[in-house]
Length: 79
Length: 245
Image: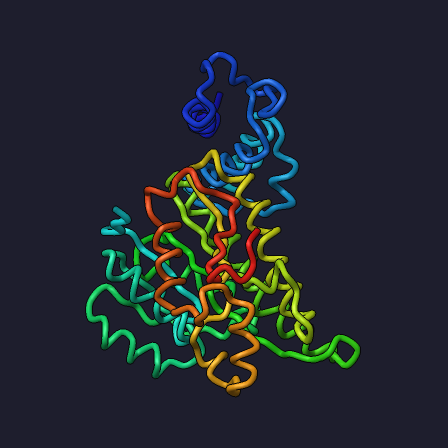
């Protein structure tokens, strides 16, 4: 994983309390990692903070897997 | 008990009788308080009276753009926002059949929509910190209804439903969302009643008197406190026994 990928993974592990090896690119936050809908809102907030960018609601709705988040942030991260 | 030292609070409608009492009570318990309202001079007077730990944030809640900016302004002034008190409200009474669209819209905008926008805005930071208290001042009328107040009753009932929905969403994050429902309280709103109206009102109140703003503020202090952590989605009725639900 890229640097951004590693940082995303760290946030997901910390926030959801899951095993690091479960956090693969294709892992779905809700189906594979046990997140509820409020967790996904919080993850988006955590990504915004970590990467210094805004994730608009319509973009947030398309971030379903770890890979989706990494892809979005590789394009939009400011820090 | 009910110590709020180190906590920060935003009170809307702090120029009114109940809002002012709430701001004073939260401040007395140790909280830093941002007072909001439309009359800047009265907010400044409240600040002068209370001294330190007070911020003045004028805001017209009928203006959606201004409402959006209020919580960020409170967070900027105080570092974070722990306690939101949606107290501001207005009435535009009229018989249902005569009620103008504008009378309906004005009341819904200030009494309900502003509370929604502020809560949505405040809950973000509260989720991050795993702590928050949202207390909305509704009314006995939101539960009992009242002739001439179709708009006000709808807004106040809406506030109760909204609070219950939000309470369920964020309870696991250490955030509670509750309402306080005053009955007849001695304020500028009730000072306009004549002797006969006053008698009629009191005949419906087992306690035999109007309530005080301080008695509403005490309920808010409780709901804002750490001790109320397990109380959420509730409406605390403070009405001298006028309606018992």
